[in-house]
Length: 232
Ligand code: FPP
Image (tube, rainbow, N blue to C red):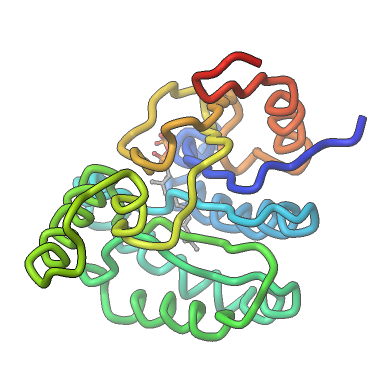
């Protein structure tokens, strides 16, 4: 059966810690394996002409984690882009981000901004990293953004399109939201953009979520009857 890949896929990459614990390794080993898996899934999605892949890399709630774990997570983008930026460029993948980078250490911020800059002309997959991201915070951001435009007379009335346009990035609506590791929650991810998303929750941990698992999700997505509130 030939699969039809959705245009925008979002993934909550959960289960790194449990994956590591199951192998008697520290949680950081799970995050490292998880970050390697970003490459696998991004290349695969790109090869199948998925337009956007938005990955939850660090939520506004993740600040509550132990310092040691956070510090490791902050180092991962440097390690990742050092290793893979050339390949991403070659593969025509464009890196973007959504969220507030400002609270991150300067080195982390710079490395992400640099990856965005170096790939901005690419026309393949938009690999969007959600970093220090929270869906509610994004909606608050959009509201404040619109207040500014109302004050300056740029807009008079707010509608749905206007809210979409005032969010943190050009992020389009999500077609398919996947969460790994068996949790069945949205965890403040892309709250506005998932209004009509199909959701798939898989039991395997993010580091084990390979191309085959990805295709099983696409197959299930292809069987869903997306009605958008209408009758079909
Ligand atoms: C959730 O698993 C995962 C995270 C909070 C971090 C996700 C980050 C990455 C996969 C790597 C980011 C790297 C780059 C290059 C952006 P968990 O720790 O909550 O797992 P658990 O529920 O099993 O404890």
